[in-house]
Image (tube, rainbow, N blue to C red):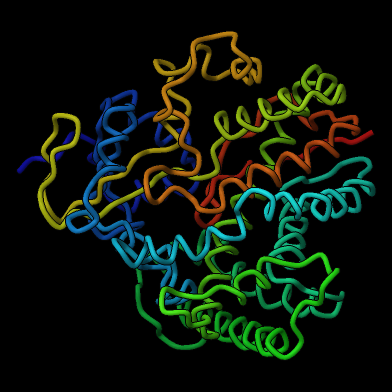
Length: 428
């Protein structure tokens, strides 16, 4: 069975383009081959068919996990994510884990974390002056938020210990040469090999996290403390009334880390990159209109989505928007293209928060999918949006300018797209 057309260049060259110039690569593929199109990279062993039209995206999200398991597409994350990870599970197991993890993101519980996030944002942004590489600072801030709000770190010592092992694990998969080496050579060839180095970093991370869990079980959060997501997870019970064991908790926390650290940092870095070039937007933000702040957040996530694809691996042939795709193929809703296609968004290349305030017809919900969709839509999406809102609320007091006139292009860092110069801005 034939696959949709796509680039004929060798997989290694497509992989390099996918990593180093992902935006230009996806735009070029779509411009030349349309929707859908097939790419071949070392990101997955199988060819991947990209879909971005609303009908096709909806069809991908509705695929039966029995024939199109999404977890298999993220199997390379297993050494870090763990066997209980919501990222790797499908079907009933995924839904059960999703129900357990949604508790901390429910309404008032989640909003109770906003003051702490705002306080951490003020502490970070209050020291900004001169040239700032926003991506570096947002990685520091979002990790601090995760350690304080999610992991419940209680003092600077716990924060420093956890920060060190987390940075050690993540730094091994942010480096382009190491990621390419891990993609091509999928074996642990010793402690100096890419996989061996990564495995050692994960083992050190696990040891620190299990120590934290042991402390929390003997010293739970007291009444009157701000509380944390870990405290809520420790209190959860499964359908049989049993509390989670340490391995299960560890995998839940890692899912929150993987889903909420680099992606939130990337989105916030893009926000600063965009705001520095749109002083009128910053001026309007200072007026304190909550609806406009929400519009800015949604426009940042549309104009510069951090995630690129929501893939599924077909175990059987599937019909997707009139195209029959064979088994043994990866199919993916291309989040990046769906949010930026000129035929789906008026003046798609422009950064216009006003588009969310009723100036144009409401967009098709399947064309604004920065967090994926269907039953696998990111469980932490409400928290991520709230986090971005609180940081931008504080950031509206800054005077921002771009360090260079031209906009920053996208490059890949682990699973997300980031500004290639790190969102370099001038403050003051």
